[in-house]
Every structure is written in C-alpha cells, then in structure tokens.
Length: 323
Image (cartoon, rainbow, N blue to C red):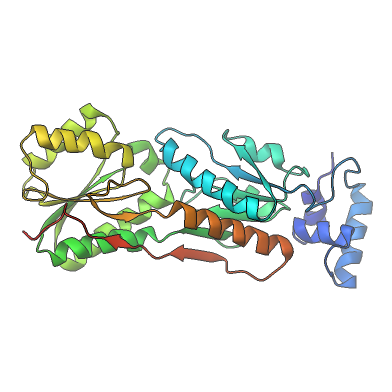
C-alpha cells in the first residue's frame, strides 16, 4: 500500500504538506501543490475514502510504553493531565502502551496528533516520528530535537538547583539516588539530564558527589543505605529521583539510626514527593496542559515554540538543614 510518507519522500516535502496540498485545508504554493499531485499520481496514491479527513478524528494518541523501570503511577498522572487538557479541546485520548503502538497509527486517520513519552537522549523512535503526518510533541527532550516540538521540566536545572541548595547549607559531600539501572541504560532523558545538572553543580561548588541507580525495593534501599554510611567521605546530603524508593529508603535509614535531617539532609525530585521533604516537584498537570496546547497550535498551523522547558521550583521543608 502506498502511504502518505511515500508521496512526501517523492515530492521532497513533509507528510503534513502532502495532506494539506491534497485536502486544501491550508494554503500551499502552486508549485508545491503541483509537485505533490504529480508524486501522488506517479505512485498511485489515493487518500482513504472510508476514513475521516485529516484533523477530523478528534483523538489524540499518547505513546506511553510500559518498560522496565517505568514509574507507572507517575506515568498515569501525566496521562491524566493530558486527558484533562484534551477535553478542553473536545478531543479524546488513545493510550498506546506497547512498543509497536506508533506503527499502529502510522499512515492512518485514527488520530489528529501524537504525544510521545519516556524520551531517550538518542531515542530510536525519532526518525519515525519525524516522518509522521499528524503533529507530534515529545514529553521529554532528546539530544537532537530538530524538527520536533518538545515539552519537559528542565531536569538539568533541577539537578543544579538541588545541589546549589545543599551547598548553600554547607554540605560538602552529596549523593544522588536515581532511577533503576535500566532507565539509565536506555538513556532516559529526564534521568540523564538530572545527573548532568547534579554533577556539574557539584563540580562547580567543589563537592564530593556520587550517583547510585537503585531499584525501588526494600532490599535495594537497605543496600544503598549501608553503602552511603560506609562511603568515604560519607555524604551528608542525599537527593532522590525515584518516587517509589522514598518510603523503603526512609525505613532503611531509620532502622540504621540515621536521623533526617540531623545526620543526613534529604531532598527529592519527583511527581509525588511527601509534604515533609524538601523537593522539586515534577509538574505533571502543567506539563500535560503545555503539551496539549502545543499540539493544538501545531494542528491548527499556528506558530509555536519548538522546545518548552519548565523551570524547576524548589520547596524547602524540614528534611534539609545546615551541617
């Protein structure tokens, strides 16, 4: 079957330009329209007559693959925010949780637009996403975002803000308890960029620092707590970017006689941080709203920024103190 991407490749334009040229939904230069129509004739391309025209499905797709190490509650909170924002535009949401979900909507008229989550720095899905006709927005920032709109928390700035706060309190040795190891192996952008900011700020302040990818289980939490206490120098402050790890880690530290914050200052970066912990909260509702607004602007042809990074907001609570 000849697809719209085949026509786009032959005509030397984007799939969305092919759609607009053949549907007449947006102004296209006569020369481009002739080139698209010629390519469609040569390839024998015919738009699906049994499907609604592009832009008429009133459905947004969210590609949220459930991979190893995924914080499912955090993913669902983000998806809920997208559903709420999409409702304001009279759109429903189709949730794609399998890796092959993108292939299922490629070249179809099932959806008006696509949100993609769990972005890696060198995400293998990017070439496909750049070829799709519907507008695409990434909830995450890859190393090379060219040609794609992106929305995310500025995780590098979040890592820097946490270390700046701890350095201001006099801490000289800091540690980061991160996501499970497979998240780093996938080069998940949020995890990698936070480490970048954490490491850069620690170097700038002259602090000793260490990073510990950790499974969110009681045995892993106890192992991490033991490792931190035996380290030389032992960290006097710990940042946690792993929501499910917080409770078992606090339990393990308490069992070892570690007092928060007298013996160890504790911070968290996540979507569901306890109200007693100094934290940078990932603003799921704001991210979902920004992403959907950006999709709708792109869908309507309104100029929109390519990358939107929300600044981190650090809330100081009783879990951190001066050394």
